Length: 68
Image 1 (tube, rainbow, N blue to C red):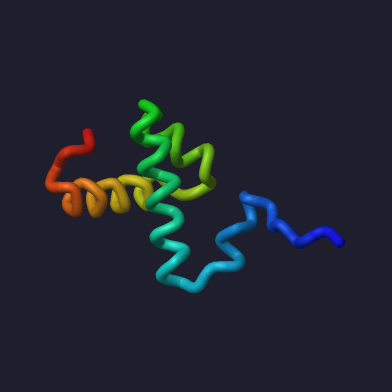
Image 2: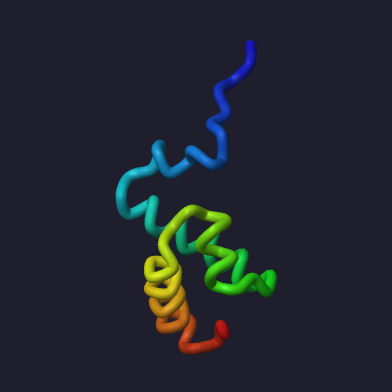
C-alpha cells in the first residue's frame, strides 16, 4: 500500500492559514540564502514581488537584520 504524498507545489492547500505564511516565509528564506534576487523568488514561488518584500522585511526584523 502506498501513502499519499502531496505535490510540493500544492502543499499550501493542506496547511492552515498561519502555517501557510510560515511555510511561505521558510521557502523565501531558503531561496534568499541561496543568493536569489527578490524578483527571482517572486517568479519561482508565484507570489507578487510586494509579498516577497513584505515577508523579507518581517524575516529581517525577526533575525535582527542579519539577512541581506
